[in-house]
Image (cartoon, rainbow, N blue to C red; front, side, top):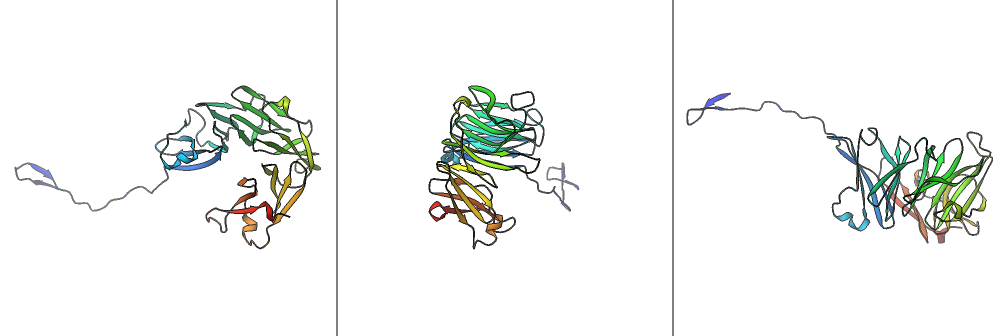
Length: 297
């Protein structure tokens, strides 16, 4: 209500009877994160006041202090609203990811983003199982057939390896070895036969020297220090020696619910151990189960 002040002027006197505010809402979220070569890459989605994807890339040791984004992508100028990065991979040189749902591959190195894998290119199919070694990115291109393709700043996208009539799945590399599974007789749901193949890591398709390791049944895996580690069943972890084809296993007996909800792919494969992400309850925190290869039989 208006009232009279000491100098005779009218002043405003107000009493608050009611107040309200809008419901809380997220304005940003950490969406995905990757580590490699002593560096970390991660994506922050900002929902308000605009739709922005902020990509960060820095030495892992520097994450104790704020860093500036290496790349900012805005919707709809740079890609459709709601787009996210999947299969994020990091290296000392940069990072790579699949832009979903566009089905494009993004490679960021030397401060420059490059996008490829689109319709009309040498690899128009859906990019899956992205791998990054330095500034060299590889992926499995899913279309009528599945083949391995690659790209780097020094070259255009090209086929890395293909076998007519055979689907190449389960791609993984640690920069020392490359491994994949060859699926024969695909009927739209299953393979008649699957084999594990490997080759020393190379950057040039012409230098690739594929070698059959042996028959394999079931899940794909992750390469690390000469092993291909996977979970062929919910109750076991398997390590395949790429040099000899020898198989050793760790049975997940006695882990109770952990054996059911442990991640299918390893978080990492080290020289002496591997680890899997675990939730012991729905919505619970993620923890690691570390398995020493000495305990495999």
